[in-house]
Length: 330
Image (cartoon, rainbow, N blue to C red; front, side):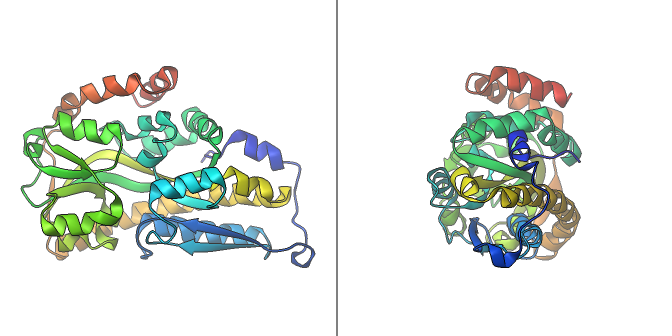
């Protein structure tokens, strides 16, 4: 699998082949945060633990990666802004939030773009992914890996979603992202932007009817306790970025930069495999916990209903890059 890291990062540390003895260097502490749970199958948590394991092993005791789940370092947007300022070292961030500082990441969130996980991984590991990472680097944030949250699906308390009309009138929480808002609006739903930390209570109290979310996050955050219907719409591939502050990265000695880049690549590869294995188990688990599960009848009908979203995204992203991405998934 090709590296998903920024090309210039690898070149920066390519000449370094060994790490200095642990006693010769002061230990570097990196704080890594994410907003979901620390559960065994949560895709963010799985990725965080794998990165910690890979980097600490490569660094020979010279790096400690401290993990902060459950919004301990803040919601995703403050986490990302902290990385830009250098006050947060690293985080695992949802693609839609990354797109708030680098709009071209909206390409990854185009509804019904990818047929399967392999197609999405190929795009992200290739030229399109590298170009996205280069754009993000100019904003002070480095992409160490494009991890996987699994496809996003719709859950709600009104009705199962089998056809586009089933979305009509239902209040769905979405991230503050024009692609997500546009998708639900074009399907006739009511898109309500909301911070993740408010969602569980909002569904429980009926402020919203449901949300769209990866399977593992439903399970680990106990959304099955407050929602009834799970529809496997697979509408958006959920890329979750393993990101690091450029300022924090630049403060590290060159050999640890190399170790960090390698750890990001290795952790991303392992996290994707683990996430794929977890997904099928999760569907069975959610059914056992009382959720009513169904699949959509005609994916082509959903794609036809959201064409206006593609048109709007073309006006806000790198047009050449979007054309390259669409060509790659044909």
